Amino acid sequence: MVKFDLGRDVLDQLLLDKKGREFGRVDGIIVHLRQNKPPRLGEIEIGVFTVLRRVSPRIAAWLQRVAARVSPVSLESIRLPFEDITHKDIDIEMPVDSEADERLMRGEKWLREHVIRKLPGGAR
Image (cartoon, rainbow, N blue to C red):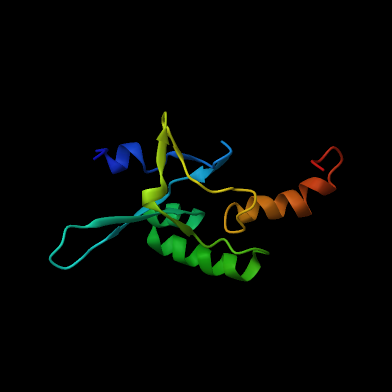
């Protein structure tokens, strides 16, 4: 059994996909509380509103409503199974492909496709 400190070793750590590409940071940790059993680590959560909820739940809720009206893509947080994490030095590796998985990096992919590629010298 591997022991680690969730706040120090997991929360806010850089996430790498199976190809070594960065695709965010661990913004939240979901713990499942079970009756008459010890708590169980469920998922890690990734998303801007997860981080904002840590600072101010009221502001996060307000900005989430605004984003739902004006953002061209969903900015909802996503959850990935905790048991899939692997520590790689100080980073965390997940068995996902950040380019192929449509849930990951939605905002960045939209900007790349609709803004960056249209700029002179933008990625093709």
